[in-house]
Length: 389
Ligand SMILES: Cc1cc2nc3c(=O)[nH]c(=O)nc-3n(C[C@H](O)[C@H](O)[C@H](O)COP(=O)(O)OP(=O)(O)OC[C@H]3O[C@@H](n4cnc5c(N)ncnc54)[C@H](O)[C@@H]3O)c2cc1C
Image (tube, protein in one colour):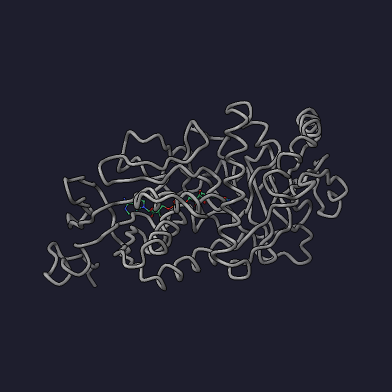
């Protein structure tokens, strides 16, 4: 049998019904694209909105991440404070917190299996100074988090839990009691369902190669040389954004992940950060999901190609064996990778890049938390309205 080849020209019906006359075209159906499209329809129910996606699924980061509903572990915030001003760092924490509340409300906790099990940070014996630095900031961080969330004592020392979890080569543990975890697949499935219920259209399998911003119409060209037309376009392709806009300050970064087969009597419950957050793991369906290690090969991992590498696979397996599931034999079920969009500044970009063409990109490792808000901000820029959220 011959492989399917799409036709080179569109029929009149295809062109008129699916390719022309859109009010807004959203490119990319990750969490940002879907949140933007939903917000557009909430604000203007009669708007004709289509989401274009090159994959059969949103193959970027949103269906491939770890599902941490996190807004800041202590070492991450201390690192951020060395690079950005206090007001910028805490403003981002607030956006992550608000974004998570937005997501929980929109999707519903049960539908995405949200669990508030806490976000833990592990410290090795040789990280004593880092741990001391965290302890010195515990009180002030808790005060600030209280101002943002209304909750007391978010960060707590949790050393007594090291034995419960069964970790080895770990000396200290700090928990952020307000953090949780969710089922990424179910989150995205629900967002897709909400979007469909609102009358948002989807065209999957369409890769956009070029956007031409005209006087009264934006023309969107696909790799097949088909053309779509819209009044406005919102690009939410995140780690792939430079393929359309090479000057945009968003660099791709690959993250590799493994998931084990189910483990009987698994004692680990929660979301965990290791080595200042370069590695992360959690329990899911009685298994361990573990990812990270990008810092071991920063150059190689600065790519938008999905793949796993021997170096990082070995590092993840070693961590699993020596620290997380010490002395237990576990089988790996599967490996995958996802693509992040990063920048010098840990801050999303939401702006108009050409007349009537907008971007909402650069979500870093925070998209589960801020993706809802960033998408909505993109939608609001397009319609020139200010949020009432
Ligand atoms: C392994 C991994 C673990 C992570 N863990 C967490 C976590 O635990 N918590 C957290 O908050 N964040 C996490 N993140 C980050 C989070 O997943 C992302 O920030 C978020 O999903 C970004 O969403 P997005 O919609 O901006 O981009 P994406 O989900 O990447 O969506 C972009 C979409 O655009 C499509 N696209 C690209 N180019 C084109 C084109 N030319 N034409 C048409 N379509 C195109 C892609 O196929 C893709 O579906 C993780 C990321 C990875 C990779």
